[in-house]
Image (cartoon, rainbow, N blue to C red; front, side, top):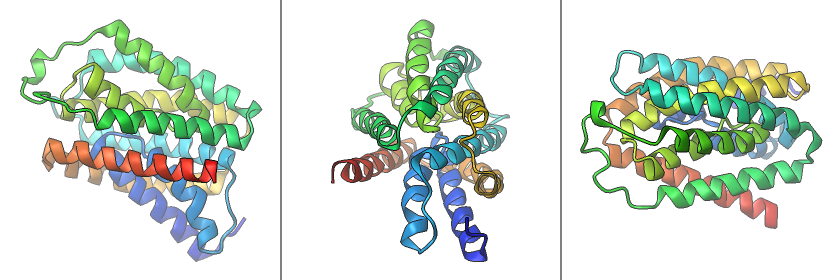
Length: 261
């Protein structure tokens, strides 16, 4: 593995950009960092990471990025404790199953699963969301068991790719559960943190995490995620929704192009 200043700077840059967007739109950042880690280092002449290595590093990074993001929201009214408990418990179980079982899958399978999840998330983000943010936060209601069911299913798939699942949880919370945008962003960071416990544990127990890249990404996460969260609290909710939709769609297209071509 390369230990040059250039290599460290590239890994740090990828972690910083991904974590800033993570805090801003309520995702763990893997939807952005996964393809960046996979494609940018070899494009710049550095050794390429395998899909399993990228998933392992992403899982650890997401754990720390979401901690920092939730901390930035700790004094706001946007963290829905009931939503976090139900979806968090379900996704924790699912992500551990997915993270532990992923060692038996080849790289092409990991990429296909990631591509399917990203495509589903992209489609859901472009579904119109009318009157979503007109309700006061204290009046928000949702089906607890439906939320838990979707979180469990997402957790299994997300644990496989080390992505913690927020890139699919956010569309589910917005489109199916009808959770307001800012509450979705804040609560999804907390749920993603819980999810990352399971996927990170599974990756670590099966030896799928590269130590040095993970440390660099963690440092970047702790710096960038709170900055993104503060920026997101000041942005228009429609802009946040479209930003997330475009990011997910672009990543889904890129992954599928590489799978099929």
